[in-house]
Image 1 (spheres, rainbow, N blue to C red):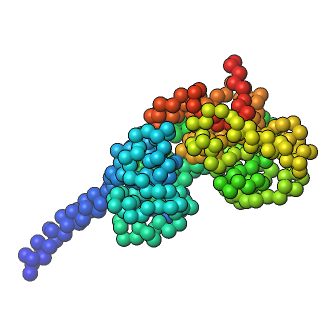
Image 2 (image 1 turned 180 degrees about the vertical axis):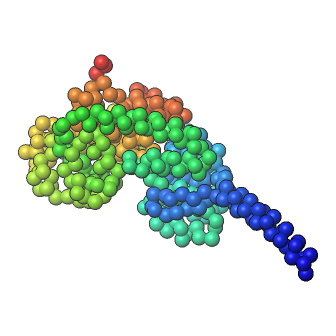
Image 3 (image 1 turned 90 degrees about the horizontal axis):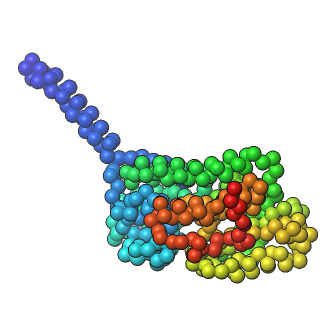
Length: 358
């Protein structure tokens, strides 16, 4: 009995050491993150196979030089040779609003990237498959950096993620620092079109496009709106905006970069200027009405365009030499590897503000 107890006494520390080592190894092979829906997700590492159900997530993956991990993408990536050349070979999974789940499961990803809001049934559809879902939007200034950093962790691209964040902070920081020097913020009515073609739809707190407006130094006349909603024309008149900005979905020609003239955007602007009910509104009387393509408001740093142009319209005295197009050109070349000359292809706004060299 004594000898047996001695063997157990000697062996127990060794077993504890082995157990501790096994636990450390197991911990090192998993990563737990909280996604933008507030859901904690634990991933088996390393992650080598991913699906991008949103164009924004694909853009970030491409910016982090991790396309070798992509096994499927949404139809907007697969079918667009302009912004996504060479991507037609990826498995086409439809869209985040209409997912081809059979194709998704067959592609065998470890992780699916999608929006916080859609598809709503994805967890149920993928239950029991071992496929994890990470919900990142990449379309709000308040969460963009956190989402990029976590994506870098997931893909083993932390250094590349920090480079993208530094680039992003340099651009947005310049705008916010300049805006902070102004004591006047113009009252702005932001009119949105999410595809229904309706007028008098706007965005307020909690919406990414409100964040762009505020960061550009504008005062949203409907700041109290939660997300987006229809508003009464009389409410617009009563709040008398000094500037009106409208964006249209979809962009007049796909992704907003194949447009070779401004006629579509001019027509949208003229429709606003001609509305009988708005003729006494300050923005209309002074013709301070501007139009953005919807794509220039989207996430994954494409909203550099909307942010930059809004800043120029709201505070022309502060941003006379600021060139949003040039920064977006740098982003496309350096972080997307896309060879597009924006001087030849790319109508994003109307009217285009002047760039004054200093």
